[in-house]
Length: 256
Length: 256
DNA sequence: CGCTCATTTGACAGAAATCAAAAGCGGTGG
DNA sequence: CCACCGCTTTTGATTTCTGTCAAATGAGCG
Image 1 (cartoon, rainbow over the protein chains, first blue to last red):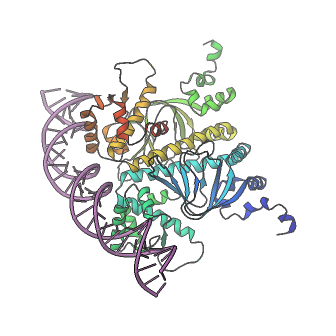
Image 2 (image 1 turned 180 degrees about the vertical axis):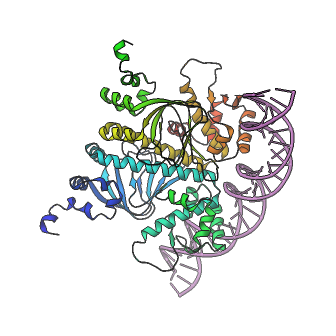
Image 3 (image 1 turned 45 degrees about the vertical axis):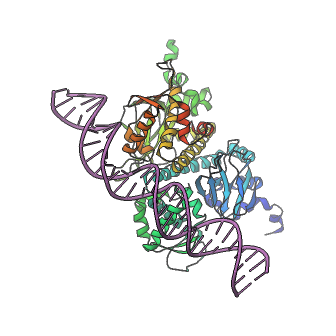
């Protein structure tokens, strides 16, 4: 806050970043953080905005500071295929490739810490410890995607939905940074529409809706509004996933 | 071949490796190749052998020189869930993690270039250029898995099967190193049983069999034996994938 | 040859997609 | 404040596809 510090605002902004120690940045020493500060800048996207379009040159990458991003595989016939969701602290974009094989769209308002891809790549080559961090994150992500993919192909719609809701419940918890005990029960925040959820779970809005209503009728969840659920019976939800609590735990941290 | 060269066989073996320039090794200079030689050794697995068991300490990693490896997610109830297939030049195992989240099993006889995980990790930290190569390979793999996963969740069984067969056709081509024009048509080599294919495609052997027979009846393929198909009509196969030829191309190199 | 196991075929039940329509929700303008 | 409009979500009826159970066929092997 001193005038001297203010003279180089870029060099301190990362130190107040809320997700600083959850991302690649945690591997950076003081000097490297300052380098990161210099090549990164905040960028805000409105809900619905396209951040990167599939096939386009992806000239930047970034870390999500707040909000949720849809990762999708829009095919030429206009049909969108949701491939994953990205949450705060997740890395966005594709380093070391000219074009992105997926589209990124803001599912909610999004706050992104954005960097020119080239600058980021150059930084990685100067700082193998950061590149190493990215490698480990990517390996973890790959495992998580494979685990999700296995879950998806081996289960029916209700089990997929239950698993999806369970992971979201955990995510929502951690997003409840502030004290907000409206109810004694956990609240599940759905960042995307029914249509998109159906897409993500490989089904249709109609079938999805029937499964939602089935959960409501059986007292597992309550719908406050379309995007806000109350989890009434976690055990019942877990029972419907067809997985054990441990397996579900292993899947969390999964964003795709 | 000289007696002098034979004196240090480890230092040259990588230079005659058939997949040498398809793997991480291609980023290695002469000296680094020699280091790789020292920490790696050939290992052979028989069809059906487990290479790494899910949950176990994965103390080694490797590159597949020949053969096909099943990557699976065996759940506690004994039900195996196939997550991917690994082909020659693919990297096997998980660096930078104590345990493997998946099982690796030899689908055919497998020739592996195996390394102690710790030694490999140490080598990566000494040679950022190799680590970089691993990062890029992992990023590509992640894209491919996401693309496969999107395909899987958006299509029905016939479309999945057609896509699977198409990618195998391309793989089989490249494995036909020698001239083997038994027929004018491409030959598709299936490295795994019907049961495993069903598992991989998220269906049952019965439904899979019906779809296979449907392709046979419609003259798209011919079965020489259970593991060897002849592709009679590639266009018809592509039509059944529900994808364009371009999208399929993008998915190749995909092993999961 | 007789055994076992993998694959295929058949019959049926269940799950999900599709087609169609009603209900809910949010914004606009009267 | 209310009526209207467009959109999303839900519900209903029906068809299609897939899983399940059961049995037949086929392939490999001692």
